[in-house]
Each structure stands twice: as C-alpha cells, then as structure tokens.
Image (cartoon, rainbow, N blue to C red; front, top):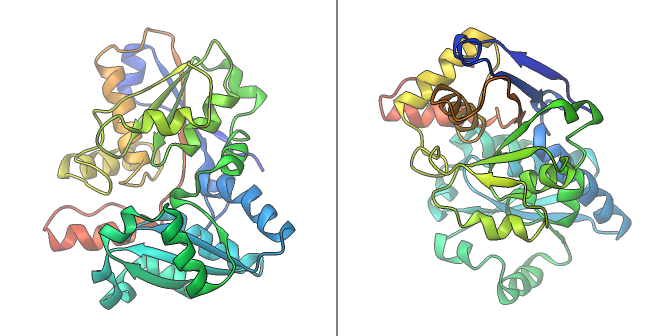
Length: 301
C-alpha cells in the first residue's frame, strides 16, 4: 500500500524558491494511519505466525500507537492489552477520545504509575506482566522494533529519489530509522523530535548504520503532547491554506519546523523537500478537550 504525494503551495515557499511535498501516509487507512500501519504490518504477521493470541503494548493518553494497535488487533482476531502511563487515567479514561476508541475496539487497559512506566522494558517487569496476563506478543512503546523499521522502509518509493531532503517527525525513532535506511546516499534526512533533547540519536543508531541524517531539536514546543497558542494557530492556518489537517503532537511541529527553516534560508533555492505525514489525527479530539480547559484556541478538524 502506497501513499500519494501532494505538493504544498504557500507564499514563503514561492518566495524562497523551495518546493515542499507531503507524502500522505495519513490517508492509507482510516484508523491504522501513517507510520502506525507500517510499524504494525510485519509485527502482526509475526504474532500470528508464532501463534500468539494477544498483543501487549504501552502508551500514553493521546497515543496513536494504542489506538492503532487496538483496531489492528480486532481486525486480525487478536486480543490487545494496553499499559497506559498515568494511574489517574483509570478514573477518567472514558472521557478520553483515544482510550475510548481503543476500548471500543476491544483493548483491555492496565493503568500504571509513571515510575513503573519507566521500568517497562526491564526483564523483571515483563515477567510480572506474563504472570498476570499469560503469553503475549510484546510491542514496545510506539511500536518501534526491527520489524517496525522494516515496515517503515516501505514508506519511500522509487519516485521519491527526486527529493533532496526527507523530513519526518520523531516519537521513538523507528519511523525515521526506516526512512534513513531506504533513502539514497545523496539525500539528507531531517528528524523533528516531539520530545526535548537529542537523546533519541542513540535509539535511532540502534536501527541504522547510515550517517546522512540529523535532528532538528528546536521545535518540540515544550515536549511530548505540549502545545502553544502559536502552534495551534499555525495548524489552523495551514489547514485553511492547504486543506490538509495536521496533528498537534507530531506533524504540526514537523511542518512548523520545516517552514521556519525555509523562512530563515536554511535550505538553498531549488531544494526539493519531501515531508512524511505520519497521521495521528485521532489525537485532535482529545487535545481539543485539553485546550478548552486551558481556554486556548481549538484545532480545526
């Protein structure tokens, strides 16, 4: 399954003589969209081949991975269990659009403290989960593992060799690792983390030996799932001008960063940029609820 490429036309791009194209991975599936479809593809094949009946994974309140895993599990006849960061959500998850959607598709939740969540990859923690839930196929947070990288390597096509710069948002690093592996040596890959810091470099290096990439770490807007009125206004203006929706956690920050770099002449004239729209639009409803409580503007859906 391949996504279509869509050209973006904005005054700043014309002024700076830079072209921007979006790969619309958000359109390849209504509920398992973008990079989540890619990451789950081979993992679900492996789970079924190895005769597992349950998928167990981790995520937070707005996790695209949680929502996508729940639906994919239902689609393939697999039980799904989500370990959710934040014990306080146990009392109010039904008002959370992401978790409600996952529950509708059959996911069972276990809400854990942030301290326990930090131990989620330890052998002792995983063994305790096996005692509690029995046998399961383990998907890491965000779905990033070797099979996920294999799926993300299929994002690029032969047609994409024409682009000079490939750009992607970053959560756990799996998607951009696949893009790096599939890129041509003459292409440069830019990653835009949604988390503070550049610690993701080592995680990405676990999945790629290539060196034609770098991170742009100034566009996280305070960290994961953190937003500002400026970002919301940008997302809404971009939607009004292009008719393309962006999510506030990943792609909104990605496109904001790219256009800021264009505006400050980071790219040479005639540069051709391909940005990956990784989906995640299901998070908008939950974010709007959060914004409403803070008297911040809403994201146009």
